[in-house]
Length: 320
Ligand code: 0CH
Ligand code: SF4
Image (cartoon, rainbow, N blue to C red; front, side, top):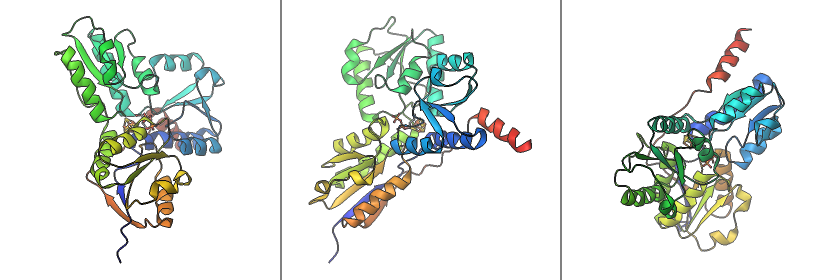
């Protein structure tokens, strides 16, 4: 008899180019400068990644003022406001900026539209580090719009000079709903010059949408504070999965989720190492879900260079 139990494994999943670069930045900094290497905020929003780097000598802090003068500090993938760079310089810190280049692109857009005196509607989650960093580029010009229900709070000066930008890790569909509502109020609202929700966020959502209708349960590996990981659970539920769960580790999988299920979907957020997904697959195989079909509607080939300041020090060290 054919076993009806199977796993649909989403691809692309897990590490995006920006996370790969940020994690490698801390690893290379530890090799080059030795421990401790200070990291402002979680380098990426994943418990396992942060715990592993901490064991290797990374010291995670909330603010620059916790870093001893003269030390190395890495800024996280989510980006920082310009004043964070200024504080680091004033404190004589050696700052290595692991902000994803695609977040930097949004910062550049914010600066450009602020320079042209636009009102900028930044769609994103209040308090999220990326939004705090982007808003810091032009606080006088930027208003946060935290989802469709916040559209009524928007106040603008000139309805012909307003643009929306966004956090890179949002739900594509919810963001478009917010934009549609904004455009009902502000027909001249300009779109960003290019998509702010990045390729990795879009691709991970696309494949989860594809598998969700066939899944009794979707398990997304990712941490509670990871915006893009949480969005994958929501997307799964919105697109037909009967249930969806976010787990940091395979050990969190509850047998009750699997009782009566025949198809389990598996994906992971952009900050999640694939070893954690493998552990989930091993756990599922132990429970009878050993047949795994990988579903890959799009392939990803993007990579980013390490931060320039780190590459320079690595080259200097090699030639010394
Ligand atoms: O999804 P968020 O932004 O919470 O962050 P993460 O889980 O660390 O994933 C990487 C995205 C970093 C900035 O875009
Ligand atoms: Fe960059 Fe997108 Fe990854 Fe964020 S999720 S680090 S913007 S590639």
